[in-house]
Image 1 (tube, rainbow, N blue to C red):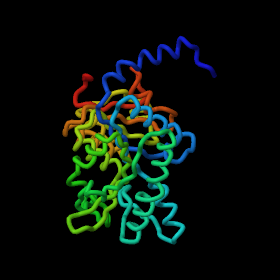
Image 2: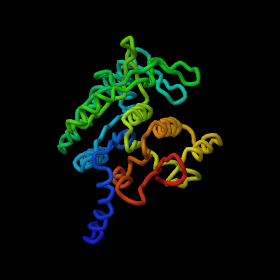
Image 3: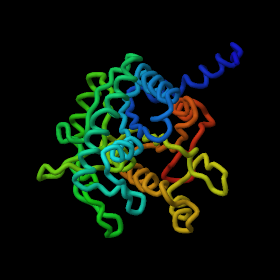
Image 4: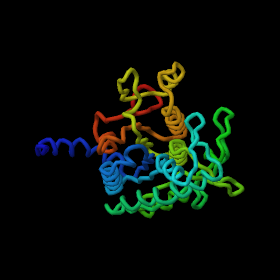
Length: 288
C-alpha cells in the first residue's frame, strides 16, 4: 500500500529532531532472534543500521547465533545442553561456538551490511583483547567455558568508530591465560555499552518488550523492574536482558530499549518516532 505524500512528510519531520539529537552519539545494538533468521528481516536490519550510520550515529553490533550453534552441533553429533537457560559449553562445544559465531554467522552479517555500503568489519571479543573474561557460573552451577566480561578494550572500538567503521562483534572472549569463552550476547552487549558510555543500548529479540498481563510497557524504571522480577511477573530469558540493561544504565548508558526484531524496521520506529514500538528502560519513572 502506498503511503500518502503528506504522511511521508510527517514521518520525516517527526524524525528530524531525533536525527539531530543522535548525530555522533554511540548506539550498541544486540542483534538476535528471528531478525537473524528471516531473510526479509535480515535485509531490513542491514538497511536500518546502515541508515543510522549514514546520518551520523556511531553503530556497534553484538550478535547472537544460538540456533546456528545448535544446528551445527547436531550435524557433527554434539548434544546441546542448557543449564538454567544458558548453553553448557565444554571444549568441543566451544569449538563449535568459535566456528559459528566467529565465522559464518559474523561474516554473513558483515557481508549483508556492506552490500548497502555500511562499512562493517567483523570481529570477535578475542581480537585485540576486546573482551577479557572470567569463568562464570549460574548460582553455583557449572556452565563450562562460559565467561563474564571483566574488561573491555574501549580504545580499540573507539579507534574503529573514528575511522567510520561499523564493528560487528561475536560474543567470544579470552581470559588472562588465553582460554576462550562463550559469552551471553545480551550481557556482552551490556558490558560494551557500559564501557563506551553509549547513548543507547538496543536489544532486538523475539518479544515486543516487557509485557505485564500481555500488555506492553512503553517505559520501565529500575524500581518497577525489580518489583516485577521479585514477584515473578517477569522471568526467563528477560532476566539477563534486564540485569545487563540496568547495569549499563548504572554505568552511564543513557537509555536502553527492548524491541521486537520480528517487526520490520522496528529499530528505526523505536528510535525515530515519539511513540516507539518497544519498552524503554530508564533509571527513574520520568523520562529524561
